[in-house]
Image 1 (cartoon, rainbow, N blue to C red):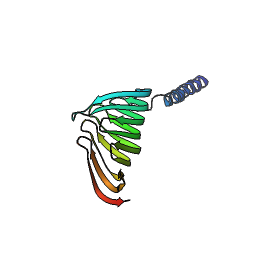
Image 2: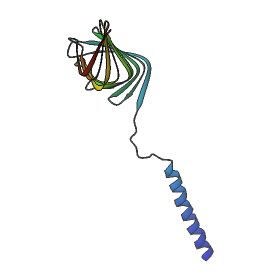
Image 3: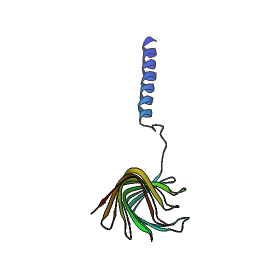
Image 4: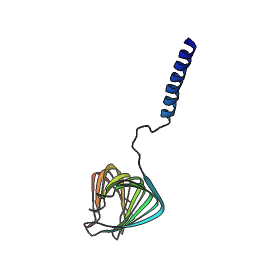
Length: 163
């Protein structure tokens, strides 16, 4: 009798331990996200201010309403913007540019490492360092806002270097 009771308790204890072991491999309780990925992407988009965008990238990942574009190039009639990575909210058209950002227009080249954007407004801004070159003039500063139509650049703390 005692022997059968001990065997029953051992089986019950073993089943609880095996159940805990199996549950440890289950979901961690995090949110599941469906990620779609594409290579060599070209997208056309239009803004409120009449700017027509052609957005190109080496790879594109979509998670819900958020888009991550790597090796990005945003091309419009007014300017071309290149960045290492671009995060865009598809519903608002707002986003963030990271890594080696370069804005090139007819007579202006601007470089920064981080900027925020509003594609619908044609506006790029940030509080980090920016370097502008216009002809032989070079302007460096911190804190900037660039509007594409009409082209307007505002730098908060600027230092001009005429070469």
